[in-house]
Length: 325
Image (cartoon, rainbow, N blue to C red; front, side, top):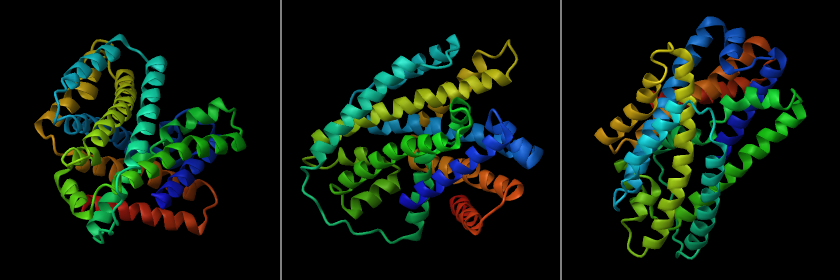
């Protein structure tokens, strides 16, 4: 997680330098200006596919986390997100602030409860296949790159401020991920982790099955709900608004709702065990290309490249190949 965080933070800085240099207002224009039409086509295809895969994963995650209790809210959420998109809302600041507050509060309670769990000696799972799957999934936590052009314009292309914004904006979520993983893994042994991975289940769905962990599992569900629903609504709006911009006026209301809400939800209902696999595709292939491979190729082509750029590019290509295989 530390290595991938540093690598993705570096590619974010690369994107920022390219935006400052070209004054691009978004990533499509940036990659078109640096990598030409092939770069633009690759970005557009991977961008839309990435967001679709994330939505399938979020809906599937909600289903697996709350499968053990009565939770009809998934169907209500479908209607709620569809109404938001139909009304054409571009942002939901107050709702996002409320959900973020829920994330922070439930995170604090969960960590406090998990710290009282008797710690176990965690034995590493020394499988290359498990490592490769972990790399792909971890990349999903570091997908801030689409916001880089907006940050650059908001900060008036001040490179020092941009670097600070990226560091602090990504450091806190990174530390939260480290903490939640450490306290969660103390409660699970390698056998339970392997079985959960094989079933495609999130950690807190595994905790629900463990005796004496019901309270922790409950707060894990609450934390996961706030975290997933925040991302779900944000990604739905992003994909839906992008599709609305691409559609004709007559179909601009219905088609985005089908593609960004209804279809991902139906896939999650049809195959409720693809949470991990969908995150693998999203991180190891699509986000890997957008946030790792394309920025490095753009820098190598248009700016002075360092040996580290080629080493990082080889690393991202390795993750891409391992995920596809």
